[in-house]
Image (cartoon, rainbow, N blue to C red; front, side, top):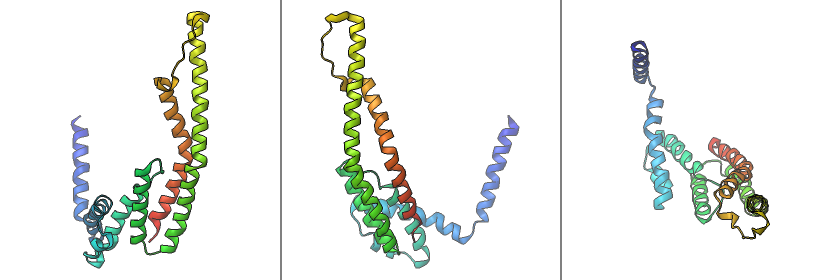
Length: 197
């Protein structure tokens, strides 16, 4: 046991020693990326002027600030499941467009994202409604059959299957499956956005 603790301590000490060997670039990155993240959070929550906030820093650290801010803004883009998500998407995408130099490439990716969101809201909504009704019908039939077997033909009580825990659990699982293809495509677009200068 002492060998394991010593090994862990030795590993930690080696890491600390390597910190002393960090380059100036690494130190700048460690210092300013978190500040860029804070600027993005401020932009999203307080409606601040992101470009003005970034412009207050020296030129040699702006790329780290932008890198940190980009990470936060990209992570805040999600499927438009409700009005809050739509608003957050719009705000995040506006912020990214401000920070990125290649506006044309950003707009090309935004076209893909808008198409994905439109598809999600139209065809995806229809798919979700059909899957919901199908699941509801299947589980209603199964529950009624089980109750008839237990209580005989006298059973004619109507069951609100939507309130059953089994239905809720199956519906969440089905929603996750239906959303997964959209999420995969969105994640690819988000990776492309992160890579743009």
